Length: 313
Ligand SMILES: [Zn+2]
Image (cartoon, rainbow, N blue to C red):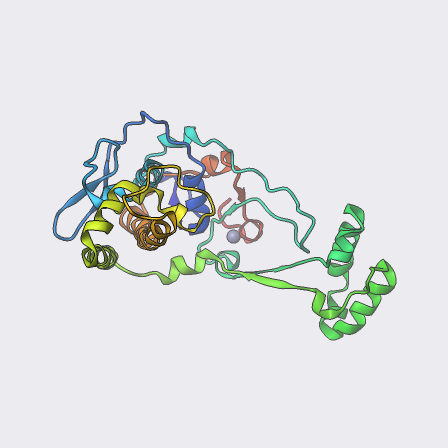
């Protein structure tokens, strides 16, 4: 993700995931007036708007909740360089608290001054600290992290010797086995961003294709499904939830049956939602006007790898 502040400064980059995170933190006020209300202009020229006054008999508009529509419009505005909504961020992106569960403590989001920064592209591995150590408390966790880092040579050469030394020093109960070090690889959204080279037209075609699929699915049982899309579509997230739908159900329909339909709506909606975000980014970046001081005020920190290489900070 390329963020340009102004022409006197260097360009800043953040990952797509962090970009989306900024928008998620915005609490759009009820009466906020977006300049650009168009969620999507279909290849056939039809425009779908996202304000609450928009036609409620339109399925495309009806399946999104007002929260979702506001966030799509905010996302689009931000991509176009409008940062006025950022004052409604309800949470400064908090420095994450250290859960004391992983070898590496959770970090604040960072921005990069170098597009080739390895931290933008590499997935990172999250290694869990064994429960037996966590149970011993904060000091044990901090000691364990230190020991883990100091003994990197031993770990690489002979993991079982490392494990034996941990058992000797930390006396975990029961003793630790090599397989107790669970690791998960967290994919870095920076990679996707670089790989995703689709044009605006291709993304538009993909949205049209998903949309057509959805329309055809409605047509298979038009009377029932169209009504549910219009009346309950915005609640589609509840399809997978245990919560009761606190509304009068359609005639002759059980809640279970309704939820099964909502799950399908949610699947299509999520795909359209994600592709719309891709579309806005592709359409308006790289002319996005966000400077590093704004990123700092939101809780981002400059990437230390970029700084070490003198990446224009
Ligand atoms: Zn970097």
